[in-house]
Length: 349
Ligand code: PHE
Image: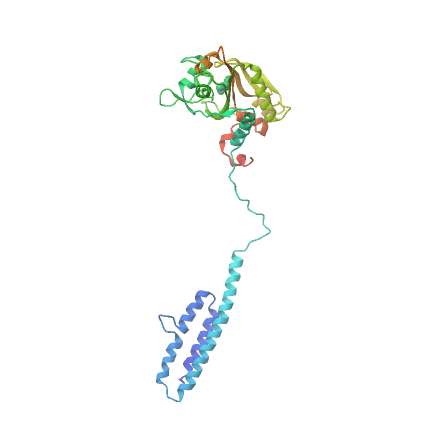
């Protein structure tokens, strides 16, 4: 075999292999095979080792040819590398292609629960009338939930609330926010010397049949005003003002005589809903009116339990269901939606 035949052979093989190499990785392997790596010799280096065995006459031609082959292969590698790079770029672009004509994916945003939004609205309305927010516990003593509200043990009026009792004796989940009347009068009234004007928003619990108009858990907003000359007219004025801001000017309110052990006289406050549909009649029990609050003048016994002398002081209290109140406003005709956590409902607010 002529001394340069091996070089020709390497050149042909290498060029063929090069045109088959179609990725950066394949090119690197190719380079290792022919030019060698740090750790191993390539085919060209091996061919060069033949130089030592050649005659003086043969050497220049071999050397020249060897250089040629190196140059050819280096140039071919550069050209091929450029091609491969373009192809790979093309492939990665079309793999990650974005169709700009497709509709966008809206990012999901956190939002406030409709009930929270509504409570804020209610609080704001009362804040404008000078009411502050007072917090009282959801786990209550039997004494606060009933006893101090003029319902001693065995009082039949306790049956007005279906109560969740805790395992620990003497404790209940509050059935209404009214126990906060006692707590706020005792804390803020300073032994019956200071007036009180607060609202108490918060969750209450009842062991109830769940229906479109009643849930087992719901918020109430209790309101308490104690002062020197508070009358039922003040209660009425506050509610008319509330309704004006909650629903707008035209909404009709109705005050109905009622009974609560802790108020005397007692009323229930209804807002007009209508009777147009079957649902309207169901939610209003056929009357067209939806009850949104119980209220009345604080009973002298309760005032006394709060630290006041009922001869000197008087007050009114109300307990409103803000979800009930909002149903009318938001056009929700089933109170169960509030706590079902169905995103189709929640995302509408
Ligand atoms: N606590 C009563 C209820 O939950 C409502 C109420 C509050 C009535 C304050 C009168 C005064 O039904």
